[in-house]
Amino acid sequence: MTTIKTFAAALGATLGLLGASYAQAQTVLKVHYPMPGFFKDVMADISQAFMRENPDVSIEFVAPSPTYEDGLQLLLRQANSANQPDISFVGFNRLRVIDERDLAVDLTPLIAEEPDIAAEGFSPQLLDLAKVGDHQLGLAFAASTPIMYYNADLLREVGGDPENPPDTWDEVIEYGGRIAALGNGVQGIDFRWQGDDWMFMALVLGDGGRMMSEDEQSVAFAGPEGEAALELIERMRREGGMPVFTKAAGEQAFVSGKVGFAFQTTGALRNTINNVGDKFELRTAPLPLLDAERGKLPTGGNAIVMLTRDPAKQQAAWRLMKFAAGPYGAATVVPGTGYVPTNTLAAQSPDYLGNFYPANPLFQAGLDQMGAMVPWYAFPGANGVRISQAIVDRLAALVELRATPADTLDGMRTDVERLLPRR
Image (cartoon, rainbow, N blue to C red; front, side, top):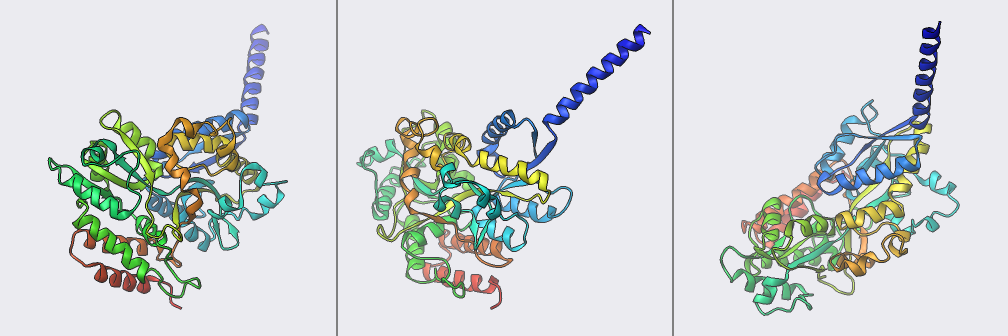
Protein backbone atom coordinates (compact mmCIF):
# COMPACT_ATOMS: atom_id res chain seq x y z
CA MET A 1 0.00 0.00 0.00
CA THR A 2 2.82 2.33 0.92
CA THR A 3 4.45 1.59 -2.42
CA ILE A 4 1.24 2.40 -4.27
CA LYS A 5 0.78 5.62 -2.31
CA THR A 6 4.37 6.57 -2.93
CA PHE A 7 4.01 5.84 -6.65
CA ALA A 8 0.78 7.80 -6.84
CA ALA A 9 2.34 10.75 -5.08
CA ALA A 10 5.34 10.66 -7.36
CA LEU A 11 3.12 10.39 -10.42
CA GLY A 12 1.04 13.32 -9.21
CA ALA A 13 4.13 15.41 -8.65
CA THR A 14 5.48 14.51 -12.09
CA LEU A 15 2.21 15.39 -13.78
CA GLY A 16 2.12 18.63 -11.83
CA LEU A 17 5.58 19.56 -13.06
CA LEU A 18 4.65 18.63 -16.62
CA GLY A 19 1.48 20.69 -16.33
CA ALA A 20 3.40 23.68 -15.02
CA SER A 21 5.97 23.29 -17.78
CA TYR A 22 3.24 23.09 -20.41
CA ALA A 23 1.51 26.15 -18.99
CA GLN A 24 4.73 28.12 -19.26
CA ALA A 25 5.46 27.11 -22.85
CA GLN A 26 2.06 26.55 -24.34
CA THR A 27 2.75 28.68 -27.44
CA VAL A 28 5.70 27.66 -29.58
CA LEU A 29 6.91 30.14 -32.20
CA LYS A 30 9.11 28.95 -35.06
CA VAL A 31 11.45 31.80 -36.01
CA HIS A 32 13.62 32.17 -39.09
CA TYR A 33 16.38 34.72 -39.67
CA PRO A 34 19.15 35.33 -42.25
CA MET A 35 22.90 35.94 -42.05
CA PRO A 36 23.89 34.08 -38.87
CA GLY A 37 27.35 35.63 -39.04
CA PHE A 38 25.71 38.94 -38.15
CA PHE A 39 22.72 37.84 -36.10
CA LYS A 40 23.28 34.50 -34.35
CA ASP A 41 24.43 35.93 -31.01
CA VAL A 42 21.95 38.80 -31.21
CA MET A 43 19.03 36.43 -31.79
CA ALA A 44 20.10 34.19 -28.91
CA ASP A 45 20.26 37.16 -26.54
CA ILE A 46 16.90 38.62 -27.57
CA SER A 47 15.06 35.27 -27.52
CA GLN A 48 16.36 34.34 -24.06
CA ALA A 49 15.45 37.74 -22.63
CA PHE A 50 11.98 37.55 -24.19
CA MET A 51 11.27 34.06 -22.85
CA ARG A 52 12.33 35.14 -19.35
CA GLU A 53 9.69 37.88 -19.49
CA ASN A 54 7.15 35.71 -21.33
CA PRO A 55 7.33 32.18 -19.89
CA ASP A 56 4.16 31.18 -21.76
CA VAL A 57 6.01 31.44 -25.10
CA SER A 58 8.79 29.20 -26.38
CA ILE A 59 10.95 30.19 -29.36
CA GLU A 60 12.35 27.59 -31.74
CA PHE A 61 14.79 28.81 -34.38
CA VAL A 62 14.76 27.09 -37.75
CA ALA A 63 18.00 26.86 -39.73
CA PRO A 64 19.10 30.40 -40.64
CA SER A 65 19.66 31.41 -44.28
CA PRO A 66 23.03 32.76 -45.46
CA THR A 67 21.55 35.76 -47.30
CA TYR A 68 18.31 37.71 -47.65
CA GLU A 69 17.74 36.17 -51.07
CA ASP A 70 18.16 32.63 -49.70
CA GLY A 71 15.78 33.50 -46.90
CA LEU A 72 13.19 34.73 -49.38
CA GLN A 73 13.42 31.54 -51.42
CA LEU A 74 12.96 29.48 -48.26
CA LEU A 75 9.77 31.36 -47.39
CA LEU A 76 8.43 30.98 -50.93
CA ARG A 77 9.08 27.22 -50.87
CA GLN A 78 7.50 26.72 -47.46
CA ALA A 79 4.55 29.07 -47.92
CA ASN A 80 1.35 27.70 -46.38
CA SER A 81 3.02 24.42 -45.44
CA ALA A 82 3.57 22.83 -42.05
CA ASN A 83 7.22 23.90 -42.23
CA GLN A 84 6.48 27.58 -42.68
CA PRO A 85 7.95 29.63 -39.80
CA ASP A 86 5.63 31.77 -37.73
CA ILE A 87 7.99 34.75 -37.85
CA SER A 88 10.78 35.67 -40.24
CA PHE A 89 13.29 38.49 -40.61
CA VAL A 90 13.03 39.64 -44.23
CA GLY A 91 15.33 42.02 -46.10
CA PHE A 92 13.69 45.40 -46.69
CA ASN A 93 14.13 45.01 -50.44
CA ARG A 94 12.25 41.69 -50.43
CA LEU A 95 9.19 42.81 -48.48
CA ARG A 96 7.47 43.65 -51.74
CA VAL A 97 7.69 40.04 -52.91
CA ILE A 98 6.23 38.87 -49.60
CA ASP A 99 3.39 41.37 -49.98
CA GLU A 100 2.64 40.49 -53.61
CA ARG A 101 2.25 36.83 -52.63
CA ASP A 102 0.17 37.66 -49.54
CA LEU A 103 2.50 35.69 -47.27
CA ALA A 104 2.72 38.12 -44.36
CA VAL A 105 0.08 39.41 -41.96
CA ASP A 106 -0.68 43.12 -42.33
CA LEU A 107 0.17 44.63 -38.94
CA THR A 108 -2.00 47.72 -39.43
CA PRO A 109 -4.90 46.43 -37.23
CA LEU A 110 -2.50 45.38 -34.46
CA ILE A 111 -0.78 48.77 -34.52
CA ALA A 112 -4.17 50.50 -34.39
CA GLU A 113 -4.93 48.64 -31.15
CA GLU A 114 -1.81 50.05 -29.47
CA PRO A 115 -2.59 53.12 -27.30
CA ASP A 116 0.36 55.08 -28.74
CA ILE A 117 2.78 53.17 -30.98
CA ALA A 118 5.05 56.22 -31.35
CA ALA A 119 5.46 56.39 -27.57
CA GLU A 120 6.81 52.85 -27.76
CA GLY A 121 9.62 54.11 -29.99
CA PHE A 122 8.10 53.23 -33.37
CA SER A 123 8.12 56.55 -35.23
CA PRO A 124 6.34 57.01 -38.58
CA GLN A 125 9.71 57.18 -40.40
CA LEU A 126 10.84 53.88 -38.91
CA LEU A 127 7.48 52.21 -39.55
CA ASP A 128 7.68 53.30 -43.20
CA LEU A 129 10.86 51.25 -43.67
CA ALA A 130 8.77 48.09 -43.43
CA LYS A 131 5.72 49.35 -45.30
CA VAL A 132 4.59 48.30 -48.78
CA GLY A 133 1.81 50.48 -50.13
CA ASP A 134 -0.85 50.63 -47.43
CA HIS A 135 0.33 47.41 -45.79
CA GLN A 136 2.49 47.45 -42.68
CA LEU A 137 4.43 44.29 -43.53
CA GLY A 138 6.64 44.32 -40.46
CA LEU A 139 8.61 46.25 -37.88
CA ALA A 140 12.10 47.44 -38.78
CA PHE A 141 14.60 45.33 -36.84
CA ALA A 142 18.02 46.13 -38.26
CA ALA A 143 18.71 49.18 -40.41
CA SER A 144 21.92 50.22 -42.11
CA THR A 145 23.38 52.53 -44.69
CA PRO A 146 26.71 52.10 -46.44
CA ILE A 147 29.57 53.91 -44.74
CA MET A 148 33.28 54.43 -45.35
CA TYR A 149 35.71 52.26 -43.41
CA TYR A 150 39.32 53.42 -43.67
CA ASN A 151 42.80 52.40 -42.63
CA ALA A 152 44.12 55.44 -40.75
CA ASP A 153 47.70 54.14 -40.92
CA LEU A 154 47.67 53.96 -44.73
CA LEU A 155 45.93 57.33 -45.07
CA ARG A 156 48.59 58.89 -42.84
CA GLU A 157 51.36 57.26 -44.88
CA VAL A 158 50.23 59.01 -48.08
CA GLY A 159 49.84 62.44 -46.50
CA GLY A 160 46.20 62.31 -45.44
CA ASP A 161 44.74 63.35 -42.10
CA PRO A 162 42.73 60.59 -40.37
CA GLU A 163 40.97 63.26 -38.32
CA ASN A 164 39.68 64.82 -41.55
CA PRO A 165 39.12 61.93 -43.97
CA PRO A 166 37.98 62.42 -47.57
CA ASP A 167 34.39 63.60 -47.76
CA THR A 168 34.06 63.72 -51.55
CA TRP A 169 34.50 60.96 -54.10
CA ASP A 170 37.22 62.93 -55.87
CA GLU A 171 39.26 62.93 -52.67
CA VAL A 172 38.58 59.24 -52.06
CA ILE A 173 39.85 58.38 -55.53
CA GLU A 174 42.90 60.63 -55.16
CA TYR A 175 43.95 59.08 -51.84
CA GLY A 176 43.01 55.61 -53.04
CA GLY A 177 45.39 56.02 -55.97
CA ARG A 178 48.17 57.19 -53.66
CA ILE A 179 47.65 54.21 -51.35
CA ALA A 180 47.66 51.74 -54.24
CA ALA A 181 50.96 53.28 -55.42
CA LEU A 182 52.58 52.12 -52.17
CA GLY A 183 52.81 48.66 -53.73
CA ASN A 184 53.52 45.50 -51.74
CA GLY A 185 50.02 44.18 -52.43
CA VAL A 186 48.28 47.25 -51.00
CA GLN A 187 45.05 48.35 -52.73
CA GLY A 188 43.28 51.68 -52.63
CA ILE A 189 39.55 50.97 -52.59
CA ASP A 190 37.15 48.11 -52.01
CA PHE A 191 33.70 49.22 -53.12
CA ARG A 192 31.38 46.34 -52.18
CA TRP A 193 29.25 46.18 -55.35
CA GLN A 194 28.67 42.41 -55.39
CA GLY A 195 25.62 40.54 -54.14
CA ASP A 196 22.76 42.91 -54.92
CA ASP A 197 21.91 46.36 -56.27
CA TRP A 198 22.27 48.17 -52.91
CA MET A 199 25.61 49.92 -53.43
CA PHE A 200 24.77 50.97 -57.00
CA MET A 201 21.48 52.32 -55.68
CA ALA A 202 23.38 54.22 -52.98
CA LEU A 203 25.31 56.09 -55.65
CA VAL A 204 22.20 56.82 -57.73
CA LEU A 205 20.13 57.99 -54.76
CA GLY A 206 23.19 59.78 -53.41
CA ASP A 207 23.09 61.94 -56.52
CA GLY A 208 19.42 62.76 -55.97
CA GLY A 209 18.18 60.14 -58.44
CA ARG A 210 15.73 57.27 -58.21
CA MET A 211 15.52 53.73 -59.62
CA MET A 212 12.09 53.91 -61.28
CA SER A 213 9.70 56.71 -62.18
CA GLU A 214 7.10 57.57 -59.57
CA ASP A 215 4.41 55.65 -61.47
CA GLU A 216 6.86 52.75 -61.97
CA GLN A 217 6.29 52.78 -65.70
CA SER A 218 9.83 53.64 -66.76
CA VAL A 219 13.43 53.11 -65.61
CA ALA A 220 14.65 56.30 -63.92
CA PHE A 221 18.24 55.37 -63.08
CA ALA A 222 19.22 55.31 -66.75
CA GLY A 223 19.68 59.08 -66.79
CA PRO A 224 22.41 61.44 -65.54
CA GLU A 225 22.47 59.99 -62.01
CA GLY A 226 23.03 56.44 -63.23
CA GLU A 227 25.66 57.62 -65.68
CA ALA A 228 27.50 59.51 -62.91
CA ALA A 229 27.36 56.44 -60.64
CA LEU A 230 28.89 54.15 -63.26
CA GLU A 231 31.54 56.66 -64.26
CA LEU A 232 32.50 56.91 -60.60
CA ILE A 233 32.86 53.13 -60.30
CA GLU A 234 35.05 53.09 -63.40
CA ARG A 235 37.22 55.84 -61.90
CA MET A 236 37.60 53.82 -58.71
CA ARG A 237 38.88 50.98 -60.86
CA ARG A 238 41.18 52.99 -63.16
CA GLU A 239 42.37 55.76 -60.82
CA GLY A 240 41.57 54.75 -57.25
CA GLY A 241 43.33 51.43 -56.99
CA MET A 242 40.20 49.25 -56.83
CA PRO A 243 40.95 45.63 -57.81
CA VAL A 244 38.44 43.01 -58.96
CA PHE A 245 37.73 41.58 -55.51
CA THR A 246 35.15 39.00 -54.60
CA LYS A 247 33.18 39.95 -51.50
CA ALA A 248 35.12 37.52 -49.31
CA ALA A 249 38.49 38.54 -50.74
CA GLY A 250 37.72 42.21 -50.25
CA GLU A 251 36.74 41.69 -46.62
CA GLN A 252 39.89 39.68 -45.92
CA ALA A 253 42.18 42.18 -47.65
CA PHE A 254 40.76 45.13 -45.71
CA VAL A 255 40.93 43.53 -42.24
CA SER A 256 44.49 42.39 -43.06
CA GLY A 257 45.54 46.02 -43.56
CA LYS A 258 45.95 45.78 -47.35
CA VAL A 259 43.18 48.22 -48.41
CA GLY A 260 42.85 51.94 -47.74
CA PHE A 261 39.09 52.45 -48.04
CA ALA A 262 36.22 49.96 -47.86
CA PHE A 263 32.62 50.91 -48.59
CA GLN A 264 29.97 48.61 -47.20
CA THR A 265 27.16 48.27 -44.65
CA THR A 266 27.33 49.55 -41.10
CA GLY A 267 25.99 46.13 -40.18
CA ALA A 268 29.47 44.67 -40.69
CA LEU A 269 31.10 47.02 -38.20
CA ARG A 270 31.29 44.76 -35.15
CA ASN A 271 32.72 41.89 -37.19
CA THR A 272 35.20 44.27 -38.83
CA ILE A 273 36.33 45.63 -35.46
CA ASN A 274 36.83 42.09 -34.18
CA ASN A 275 38.70 40.95 -37.30
CA VAL A 276 40.96 44.01 -37.50
CA GLY A 277 41.96 43.77 -33.85
CA ASP A 278 45.20 45.70 -33.38
CA LYS A 279 46.56 45.18 -36.91
CA PHE A 280 45.93 48.85 -37.80
CA GLU A 281 43.95 51.88 -36.69
CA LEU A 282 40.42 51.45 -37.99
CA ARG A 283 38.25 54.54 -38.56
CA THR A 284 34.80 55.12 -40.08
CA ALA A 285 33.12 58.09 -41.76
CA PRO A 286 29.88 58.83 -43.63
CA LEU A 287 29.56 57.78 -47.26
CA PRO A 288 30.28 60.69 -49.63
CA LEU A 289 27.26 61.78 -51.65
CA LEU A 290 27.48 62.84 -55.27
CA ASP A 291 24.92 65.54 -54.44
CA ALA A 292 25.33 66.68 -50.84
CA GLU A 293 22.05 68.62 -50.93
CA ARG A 294 19.65 66.18 -52.60
CA GLY A 295 21.40 62.88 -51.90
CA LYS A 296 19.69 60.06 -50.01
CA LEU A 297 20.77 56.56 -49.04
CA PRO A 298 18.85 53.27 -49.34
CA THR A 299 18.24 51.59 -46.02
CA GLY A 300 19.59 48.07 -45.84
CA GLY A 301 18.72 45.58 -43.16
CA ASN A 302 15.57 43.68 -42.38
CA ALA A 303 12.15 43.75 -40.81
CA ILE A 304 10.51 41.20 -38.57
CA VAL A 305 7.32 39.91 -40.24
CA MET A 306 4.46 37.74 -39.05
CA LEU A 307 3.56 34.75 -41.19
CA THR A 308 1.34 32.68 -38.90
CA ARG A 309 -2.42 32.88 -39.41
CA ASP A 310 -3.16 31.17 -36.09
CA PRO A 311 -4.90 33.78 -33.84
CA ALA A 312 -3.28 32.47 -30.63
CA LYS A 313 0.16 32.44 -32.19
CA GLN A 314 -0.41 35.89 -33.65
CA GLN A 315 -0.81 37.41 -30.19
CA ALA A 316 2.40 35.78 -29.00
CA ALA A 317 4.17 36.73 -32.21
CA TRP A 318 3.12 40.37 -31.85
CA ARG A 319 4.59 40.45 -28.35
CA LEU A 320 7.86 39.01 -29.64
CA MET A 321 7.96 41.42 -32.57
CA LYS A 322 7.51 44.48 -30.36
CA PHE A 323 10.16 43.18 -27.97
CA ALA A 324 12.70 42.40 -30.71
CA ALA A 325 12.11 45.72 -32.49
CA GLY A 326 11.73 47.62 -29.24
CA PRO A 327 14.33 49.27 -27.00
CA TYR A 328 15.84 46.02 -25.68
CA GLY A 329 16.19 44.52 -29.15
CA ALA A 330 17.64 47.68 -30.67
CA ALA A 331 20.10 48.06 -27.80
CA THR A 332 21.24 44.49 -28.50
CA VAL A 333 21.44 44.77 -32.29
CA VAL A 334 23.46 48.00 -32.46
CA PRO A 335 26.48 47.07 -30.31
CA GLY A 336 26.44 43.49 -31.58
CA THR A 337 26.51 44.40 -35.27
CA GLY A 338 26.81 48.07 -36.22
CA TYR A 339 23.26 48.60 -37.48
CA VAL A 340 21.59 51.85 -36.46
CA PRO A 341 18.76 51.87 -33.90
CA THR A 342 15.28 51.26 -35.27
CA ASN A 343 13.59 52.39 -32.08
CA THR A 344 13.63 55.99 -30.91
CA LEU A 345 13.50 55.07 -27.21
CA ALA A 346 16.60 52.94 -27.56
CA ALA A 347 18.47 55.72 -29.36
CA GLN A 348 17.67 58.37 -26.76
CA SER A 349 17.52 56.64 -23.39
CA PRO A 350 20.68 56.31 -21.26
CA ASP A 351 19.26 52.96 -20.14
CA TYR A 352 19.86 51.66 -23.67
CA LEU A 353 22.03 53.49 -26.23
CA GLY A 354 22.10 57.05 -24.97
CA ASN A 355 25.66 56.66 -23.65
CA PHE A 356 26.83 54.11 -26.21
CA TYR A 357 27.82 56.35 -29.11
CA PRO A 358 30.10 58.77 -27.22
CA ALA A 359 31.99 55.76 -25.89
CA ASN A 360 32.09 54.01 -29.28
CA PRO A 361 32.94 56.60 -31.97
CA LEU A 362 33.31 54.03 -34.77
CA PHE A 363 29.52 53.57 -34.65
CA GLN A 364 28.81 57.29 -35.09
CA ALA A 365 29.03 57.38 -38.90
CA GLY A 366 25.91 55.27 -39.32
CA LEU A 367 24.00 57.35 -36.80
CA ASP A 368 25.02 60.57 -38.58
CA GLN A 369 23.45 59.30 -41.81
CA MET A 370 20.03 58.43 -40.39
CA GLY A 371 18.57 61.67 -41.74
CA ALA A 372 19.35 60.53 -45.29
CA MET A 373 17.74 57.10 -44.91
CA VAL A 374 14.97 56.17 -47.37
CA PRO A 375 13.48 52.73 -48.05
CA TRP A 376 15.50 50.27 -50.13
CA TYR A 377 13.62 50.26 -53.41
CA ALA A 378 12.25 46.93 -54.63
CA PHE A 379 11.44 46.47 -58.30
CA PRO A 380 7.85 45.38 -59.00
CA GLY A 381 6.76 41.97 -60.21
CA ALA A 382 7.99 38.41 -59.88
CA ASN A 383 11.45 39.15 -61.28
CA GLY A 384 12.70 41.48 -58.54
CA VAL A 385 15.57 39.18 -57.53
CA ARG A 386 16.52 38.59 -61.18
CA ILE A 387 16.59 42.34 -61.82
CA SER A 388 19.00 42.85 -58.93
CA GLN A 389 21.24 40.09 -60.28
CA ALA A 390 21.14 41.56 -63.78
CA ILE A 391 22.40 44.87 -62.38
CA VAL A 392 25.20 43.07 -60.51
CA ASP A 393 26.20 41.17 -63.67
CA ARG A 394 26.46 44.44 -65.60
CA LEU A 395 28.53 45.97 -62.81
CA ALA A 396 30.91 43.01 -62.97
CA ALA A 397 31.60 43.68 -66.64
CA LEU A 398 32.28 47.35 -65.86
CA VAL A 399 34.63 46.60 -62.95
CA GLU A 400 36.46 44.02 -65.08
CA LEU A 401 36.83 46.74 -67.76
CA ARG A 402 34.92 44.65 -70.29
CA ALA A 403 32.31 47.40 -70.74
CA THR A 404 32.16 51.19 -70.67
CA PRO A 405 29.85 53.13 -68.34
CA ALA A 406 27.63 54.01 -71.30
CA ASP A 407 27.39 50.38 -72.44
CA THR A 408 26.75 49.26 -68.88
CA LEU A 409 23.95 51.75 -68.35
CA ASP A 410 22.31 50.85 -71.66
CA GLY A 411 22.54 47.14 -70.82
CA MET A 412 21.08 47.69 -67.36
CA ARG A 413 18.11 49.57 -68.78
CA THR A 414 17.47 46.86 -71.37
CA ASP A 415 17.70 44.07 -68.78
CA VAL A 416 15.42 45.78 -66.30
CA GLU A 417 12.79 46.71 -68.88
CA ARG A 418 12.75 43.11 -70.13
CA LEU A 419 12.19 41.73 -66.64
CA LEU A 420 9.59 44.24 -65.43
CA PRO A 421 5.90 43.22 -65.48
CA ARG A 422 4.16 43.80 -68.78
CA ARG A 423 2.22 47.05 -68.76
